[in-house]
Image (cartoon, rainbow, N blue to C red; front, side, top):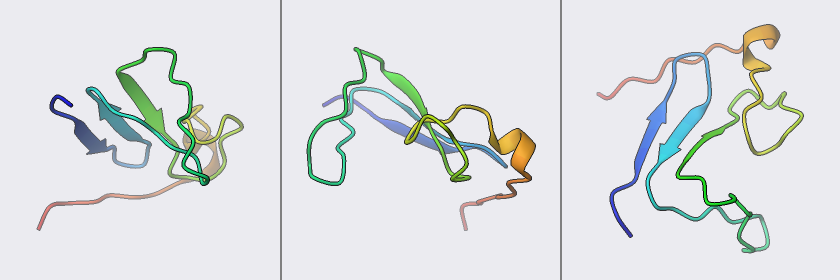
Length: 68
């Protein structure tokens, strides 16, 4: 696997880029249709779980994570 970058967006999703696999709760891979850049929901309000659909902008989701 090549380098994978995971970025926590302020008040938004988790961005993942690179060559990666996302598995469901039973260990089955989720079809990413060849995508190498995705956004995972952090707010819990998406209608397209586990992917972000932009709902965080309307539901008041607040999160700022900083490296210490």
